[in-house]
Length: 417
Picture 1 (tube, rainbow, N blue to C red):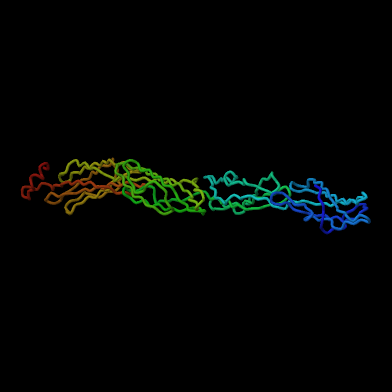
Picture 2: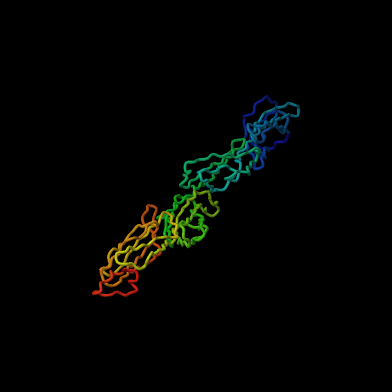
């Protein structure tokens, strides 16, 4: 480029032999604009204004520019050669160095803050494909930009406590101009809850109280999905679905004659804050409870009328299929002191037979009532769930009196001599 210079202040940084006299502008640094352009005109970089010669009075210095690449993309070195020649052809030449630099930092959009989840093993994915990448790197001069990042895990948290990664994104152009921005990546804990019940074996129509607590500190609300399986013949109050961390109660009714198993599966998850994901990969909790049927007993009485001193014979049977076992308790009831031989019993089993001799020392037939209560056992073998009683009644005749004694009703003595 050749231009005619008309004004500016010169200094004495030029060197060379001259016939005519000039002072060229000194070294100068200019900067690239937003489009990587620059203005090296003499109005910016300096002009020659003091041309002089011993004879020629119509002098005007001119220049030519040689532009070379600088140390980085966006930097140039302009070597400006100033020439002043008088009318007799006597030249004077001086050199001016103009450095063109890029001091504009590059730009980019930092990925938004984000929340990520851990899987059931505590593993999480912090890769940019999951957390967001920079895709709009831009610079006024550099066309080969690529943002990079470093992560700080100082506050990463644990599988039980939410934490975060501080990601520092850096974009540097070829001339060393740098832009830094920050992204926060929240890392949720593994969703976990505790679920406890007071027992695992329940009587029919029992209330089961579930105590439920969150075991983690999260960004958002810990909840759970409930999946309850009632077998055929068992009904309850709970239904499948999502629930907050609150205690719940079920009421189990077993309409069968066998013990039944009910399974409750709790799948915890974290419902994130608005804009955050829902973290589903929690640690499942399964509670299995057994509900007994209503215990039943059927009594078979061999003879409902006994002579004095004869033994009662009562056999036990049941349709009940318990979880652990079943026993029978016997209450023998009589209000007359002349009747003896009857006893209460506990802990009988189906193979036991109630056999005991009953005596009547009086002169009137009396009734003894046997009430048998079935009861299922707990896991330790102790009696737990009482069922529906069965009852039998047996008459005990006195000994037939002599001819001088009182006579008894004939129908009560029909088989007693």
